[in-house]
Image (cartoon, rainbow, N blue to C red; front, side, top):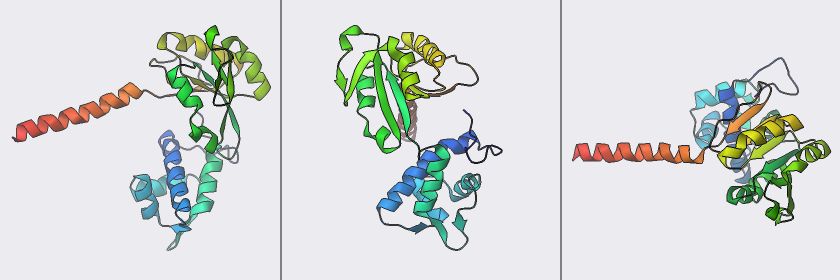
Length: 223
């Protein structure tokens, strides 16, 4: 995914930094809601769960928004990060696959609060067509091209079984979608101009299980 900004196409932000920007934005939002107007890099780093040196390095890619000896204006920095991430725009999103996960994603309020508007829910199962989820009518997957054209959709979410995911991705790209959030447990093959972000819930659980196993082994050895 390109990390170039709309206001400075000559500057590119490292992907690792891009991945942390939403964390900083969430931390700043929490500080703002608590009434904090100005915070130090140490305070913001603690709220975001990173070290302050890494935070200062990350923010240096955005520009000089801090004041030495004073810190960061919370609301101003929050706006600048939101603008950098495109969160000040309204992004139409289409979700394909309205099973249990698709239902949950459609009802997720975090999309709306962060500038993402679900404009369509699509499923290949005709028995679901006409069903209303979170105020949006489920439509046929064959309507994808029309919906993308009508709403200018650039972001698609795949919540289908693994076997269907590649075909869905291919048809999304063919319809003009250039960014895909993939919840299906499979690796997608797309062109270099298409950004794919994969969410693998089972992998995250397995990582946690690994740490639990390590702790259990350490305790057994210690005893």
